[in-house]
Amino acid sequence: MKMNEEIINAYEVIKEGGIILYPTDTVWGIGCDATNPEAVAKIYKLKQRAETQSMIVLMNGEKMMYNVFKNIPEVAWQIWDLSDKPTTLILDDARNVAPNIIAADKSLGVRLVKEPFCFKLMERMKKPLVSTSANISGQPTPLAFKDISPEIINGVDYVVKLNQDKINGKSSTIIKLTNDSQVKVIRK
Image (tube, one colour):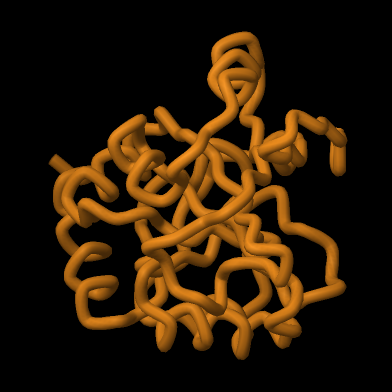
């Protein structure tokens, strides 16, 4: 019951262009509707992060993926299938999301999530969810809710009341895949 309630609360805030602090399959994230440029701009401002440093988006399946990327290299699906930990892939030629979340080279970092809260929230949104670590740019990534600065907690429109006592492992692996099949590991 609690999870459904939190999904509804978070969805209502996101629908109105708000930003949320929420648990992901890795560390706590700051998120919003990835198709809303004003909401994305609020996150950059809160994190004191340059818009040239793009953020990643979470998606919950193939349908959402193909809405954002026309061409997804076959190796992307293989990496996700074989990976035993959360893996973010940076793919080329993103579309149908806020322009200020796409990198200058037209790429976008994306992670498919099965984590129940994120998955169900996106089911309701029918849109990808921005996910960036819950810290001011340049500060260490908090591994637990208790380590998140008051500045971040007070700066979001809603804090999800789930998994606040869980200690997270670490951020996801990041791999860049280009349409011409080049692979580059950015973060292990």
